[in-house]
Amino acid sequence: MGAFELALCAGLLTAAAACDVGYDFGEASEAAGVTELTVTLTWLTVEPAEIADVYLSTATSTACNSGYFGAQFHPKTQSVLFSMWDNPQHVGATNRSDFPFQGMPASDNCWRNALDSTGKSSGVQCGQPWTRNPAVSKNVSFSFGAPYEFRLAMTMQNASGALWEVTMFDPTDETTLSVGKIFFVDVPLGLPTTCRALGSSQNPPKQGLSAYTFLEYFEAPFDFTTIATWSNFTAVAPHDNKAYKPNVTKDCCGKTYGKPPTGAFLDTSRRCVPPECDDLELTMMCGPFVRPSKSAVAANPSCLKTSGEQLVDSRDVTRMHDCWRDGPPSSLHECFADRTF
Image 1 (cartoon, rainbow, N blue to C red):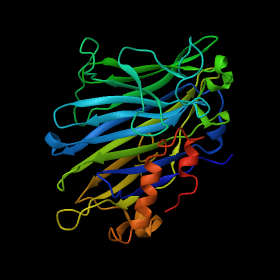
Image 2: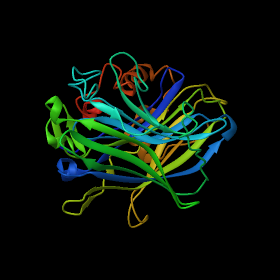
Image 3: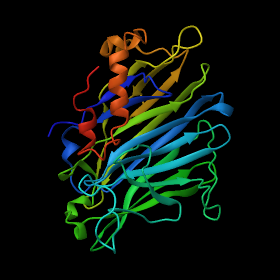
């Protein structure tokens, strides 16, 4: 299978809007036995913070489940999330009393629900703080310019499946927060043990690497500006101590909504790679004063068109953004395989 390539940033004709940038792992897209992924989030600007609603997340998958993790800014608080959908062959409840679902909450701050979509979508969502149970709720507070390291890893396995956890290391107080733990059932439901690694396909289950990042904001005011980076993206196969690092396929560029001079939000991204940067650094930006780079415009000539001219593309994005709406996709690649600038 070729490299997992996706990159799109364009407007939604809904309250929410998102900028998506994909990663290319090259030959490593078929890497086997990768059970750990780390990436560092740094918030640079969220203005005005007191009314912000923005989510910076990385989507990835095991060989049987797909979802994403990341951090959110809200008007009065910050939060972290870890969401994974059920395997495409086992959506919702199973007929086993010992394993009622393929994805099982494994920590007190995780729960079964339809996640961020509707219809046939179902899975497990974890988060902090968790207002449903104040006893296990942990406050989250981000400092601008501080690098927060997120780690997704398989931490345990047994005859029935594997336990995956997302953690976040906070450098400001040198503490590690558990964002959540999810247990994915495999063998008892007829799924192979190859599910127990990062994957490039979930139906059929296939190990490999595929991921993309999205900056999503909803109900944004017209003077809203966000700048943040994901950096040091590394996938690790512990059994042979191999580390894999991706490159960005294309910098995204797209108009969201609103009219000049107070609207016309632009979402765009820029990357810095070695030797200019120590590691891959993806900077994502949105706001009325954001301007895409010449290379991003060249890759996506339609990004500076008016909202009306982008109408068809915007409808496409809505469908892509709700990739899990009708149930889990067969692979992350399926969500974006036919998308070009």
